[in-house]
Image (cartoon, rainbow, N blue to C red; front, side, top):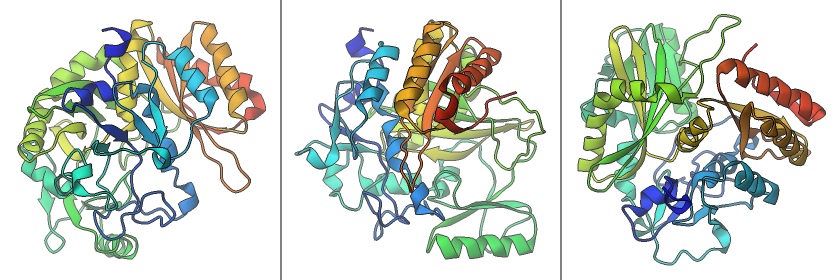
Length: 403
C-alpha cells in the first residue's frame, strides 16, 4: 500500500462511509467535569474515586498517530507540536493525521465514529444508531452472541464463587470476584453505591487462566471483517503473579498467525451477531483461555488502545522489531523525554513511540503512554532501562517491564 492507503483508522472507516469524523474521547456518567457527560441517557459505569485521575482526553489522543488522513479526527485539547513531530519522524509509514479541535470544528451533517453513544448528540449524528450501540455494548448480550462464554447466572440465583460486574463497566471498574456470601453483599452494596441503577451480570469464574487475549478487528457494513491482530494481557484478571515474573509482550507479531487460527472461530459468531443487529465498526473481543477452552468475557465496540498498537505493530515487525510492550512514564518535561527517545531510536536496537504525552501541573500529573518495540523481550527491557537512564530526572515513575 502507498502511504495514503496504508491501513489506518480512517482508511477502514472509509470503506463504509463517504465522509465522517472520528471522535475517540468517551463521555462520562460519574465525572460531571468531563467534556461530555451522559447523566440521563446511555449511562456508562466509569466511576473513579478521584476524578482528577480521569485522563480520558489522553487515552483518546493515542488514536491520533494511526488515524490516517481519509477523515479528520477530533480531539478536545490541542496536541503538543513536539509530539506531532515525533510521530512524523518515527512513524513515517503513516500519513499525517488530520487532527482538529472539537469545539472549533463545524462537523455539519457528517456522522461521527464514536467509542460510546453520546446523549448530547442527536441519533442521526452517530454513524451507528446510538440505541443499538448502547444495547450491544452491554455484557448482558454476550450469551446471545453464539461464542463460548462463562455460564451466566442471576442476582437471585447463583453459585459461589462467581463474578459480579456492571454490564456497562469500563476498564474493569465495577467487577468483583466473590467467594463468600459476605463478599456478595459487599459487591452489591459497592455497585449500588457507585454505579446507581446499573444493569448487573453474574457469571461463573473461569479458573486456571493461562492467557487473556484481546482480538481486535473492524466489522464492515456488509458483515465481513478486517482482522487487526491479537494483544496479550500480562495482568490476568484476579491472578497473582509470582515475584520476579517477567511479563509477556503485549504484542508478538511472530505469533499473530497462530493466534488468529486459534481465535478465528471464537470471534466469527460475535461479528455475525453484531452485524445482524445493526453494528459496524471497531470491535475488541476479550477471551480467557484455560485447559478447557476459550471463553468470551467482554466485547468492546470501540477504537481501543490495543487497536492503535496493532495498527503500528506490523510496520515495526517489518523493521525486525516484532515484540512490543506498552509502558507509562510520568515525565516532568515532555521535551526532554522525546530527546531521550530520539537518542535511543537512533541506536537501532529498537524503537520507542510516545502515543500520548504526559502533562505536569501543580495539582495533576498525567502519565505519558510509550510503546517500546524490539527484537525480543530482553532488548525491550534494556531499552526501558536505557530510557530511564538517559531521561534521568525527567522520569518520576515508571511501570517496570521486567528485571
